[in-house]
Length: 478
Image (cartoon, rainbow, N blue to C red):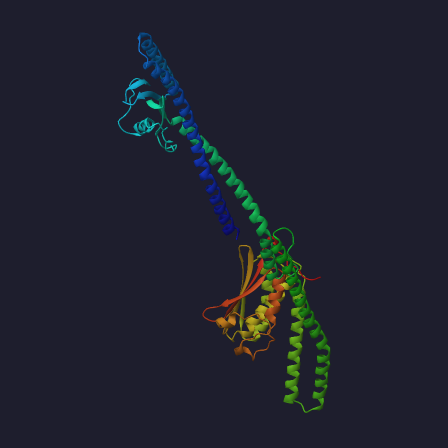
């Protein structure tokens, strides 16, 4: 969930920062250009004031007036030349006839077309030229500003400045770099905040998910620590804990009922069987009805014993230690060999030394149930094979038979309580043996699975962890 939520937050924050950064960058560029334009306007105004003195002198006749005009024109020319030498800005004062009053550099004249001509024509109409178009850092345009020189209400000349934009573009770029650095810093800060936010929001979800898996695997004591996170998730965690408490109580009541009922029914059933047996002594020997009642009573007693074993298995506390499951499996194969031989079934084992982390008593009981089931359903003349192996973090005991096997639908139900295949109802059993084995193995972190065996038969795989780090013990009620 975090991998989906975090990119979405980052994209949204990036869009917000971009929406703020682009106008800010445009504003920075506009401010830098406006500053340069204002400077140029001030410069043209100063040169226009000097040019007014030249035009005033030129309107008076006489040698002294002519000398004064020339002197003022030379002063204006020196100012323009100095201005060009210092700032590299071309500047000039031109009459309406395009004749220069003074200009720098000396080889610069009004062009016939272009921005300089447009600004000059605009100023001749007694208007300051329009603000130039925005210059961006990747453009090499020049900045043109023109101001009219007015005498007695008439435009007698125009001051024109043609500025290079390199320094201005450098300042714009520097401003953009500052804005970009700020955006990057803000983005990093936003990513950090998003990480903290998603962690804060999703931490209860992860804890809830982990706890749900623990409960599903049998650790019914697991609970969600109601701590941080949004109020909705805290309420969800509280509701989950209440649900887990109720489920645990229901399961405990069910187990207690099964155990109590099994235990309470055994005594009257034993008394009933004893009375039936005594009654049989008073009837003719070989009475089929009495024999049938005795068989059904013994079967009922076996079911009660299995129910009690199942209830105890679900409560059992395992005593795990390093166990040689190869030796244990070989021992169980030897113990079941006479039973298999009496039935005409060949029981073979391939049990090399293999260690695992298991409860020997629990594993032995589970192997007994699995081997008994395999021998029970294997026809005479066939074989049952027991193979011990290690596979990564687990050790396995695989029991394979050549019996009739199960269908795909039956395979999904094998191990369910009281379930028996409709084809095997005539074979002795209560349908609880494999359920007991599965419960015993789950208590020690193991498992029992089933699969088809080709061309016929069933494969039962008992898996147990090879080390304590491969599993977590389930929590059971004390």
